[in-house]
Amino acid sequence: MPPSARPRRRRLIARAASVAITLAGLAVVGAAPYAQQAPVLVSVDASKTGPTLNRHLFGQFAEHLGKGIYEGVWVGTDSPIPNTRGIRNDVVAALKVLKVPNVRWPGGCFADEYHWRKGIGPLKERPVTLNPNWGGVMEPNTFGTHEFLDFAQQIGADPYLSVNVGSGTPAEAADWLEYLTTDQPTALAKERAANGHAAPYRIPILGIGNESWDCGGNMSPEYYTSQLRVFSRFVRNFNPAQQDKDRMLKIAVGPGGGEPRFAEWTETVMKSWKGRQWSWDHMDGLSLHNYTVVRFPAAYKSVGFDEQEYAEILQDTLKMDRLIREHSAIMDKYDPEKTVALAVDEWGAWYAQLPGTTPGFLAQQNSVRDAIIVALNINIFARHADRVRMANIAQMVNVLQAMLLTDGPKMVRTPTYHAFRMYVPFQGATFVPVTFDAGRYVQGAITLPRVDAMAARDATGTLWISLTNVDPKTPIDIATTLTGMTARSASGEVLTGAAIDSVNTFDAPDTVAPTPAAVTLAGNRLSVTLPPHSVTVVGVRP
Ligand code: AHR
Image (cartoon, rainbow, N blue to C red):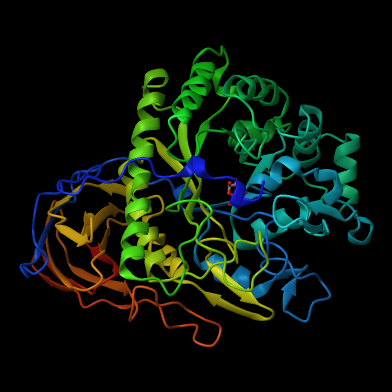
């Protein structure tokens, strides 16, 4: 269904309270007017640890949508754009830097109309089909299963396949998994070998449908749950050697956005998990989709917006915390041990499409505000890391809140890319609680926390602190007291731009790029000034 027809369901229901705001894991204390220039005190006790920030929190999503795959990733082997087996070298090189842990494919809504057999075999013999969800354009199927797995391997990411539940069958999906994973010489394995890959593939993550309450089939929670039971029985890893080592994780369709009806969805799916004798075979994760969009159809601009829209979008993005809390509470009733992960496998900003771009292609620019959205959301995931163990930003290239934009042979890294790059050290690190007075940023009727902070310690003992200044007008001095470790040195990077809507373009690709942060360390007191509308990440070495 075209985006304009959909997402009333993702509309923000509740607005943040305007005076006292509480975020998970931190205390936001009252009214520090931002005219006041006293440093914001941040306390970190590095000896106190929380859950691991699963590396899969930094996952991505690449759908057959607009120029996300075709042009963005796949240019074909005959292209003058440098490529390896049809996959753009510049995109691969840029993504490798991000250590992308997993990439979800082929959708999205596209997944529930995707028939994998159309995307295997000799390229020239593949049928051209339609992509009704996204512009009704032709789908050449030249980027199929083998090409996706090649791409995942080139960037070093785990593949996360989403199987077609809406218009497919358990047999079709089971065949796909047998084709991919079996090490027996079955007809499907021989076909895989004939198509160039004799060795079994490893599929560590599998989605059972996508948004089955909407574009994935308009199912009721009860109907979806029946489908889940059937699919999860038949669609499996057919390679025993792989099962022993690293069992394939199954992600069930969960809620989308803040509509009250999604409480019933989570309840129904979790109840069904609880009732299963072999519950481990049923699902390992429940997805949550949540876009930052004030209302659909998305009308807010991705560049050229004013401070009011800046504030409204940031207010909207913070609803992620409430959604995670609400659905985690339901999950806790059936799964107090938190065996089932909450997988936020679609998140990010959804703005009006750029003027002059193809309807349904979801092309948007990416500004400093988007880098702040990255920091705020990842910080929320980190505070819920005991339950939230996977997340996938939407999407990877050229679509929605993308890492990279391409135009023919040109490629540009977005502010979102840079924020992800700065957060790489948090992958697999151990959460360390921080306390601080977030103060208030006020714009019209909107009041938001002015500062956000999150910390984690990596395997080498380095403490990483992320500090975000939401305030678009005023710099903030931060004074951090570190206990529980001896700090020997510190350095950091800051990401900002001249304006809240500063962007990178093909002509000026480095307008928004990280620069060294002026960090000072005196004993165990660390000081840094956060420019307006900025994200800073500091590493403190023991
Ligand atoms: O990311 C774009 C679309 O948003 C996905 O295809 C769908 O799952 C969601 O509605």
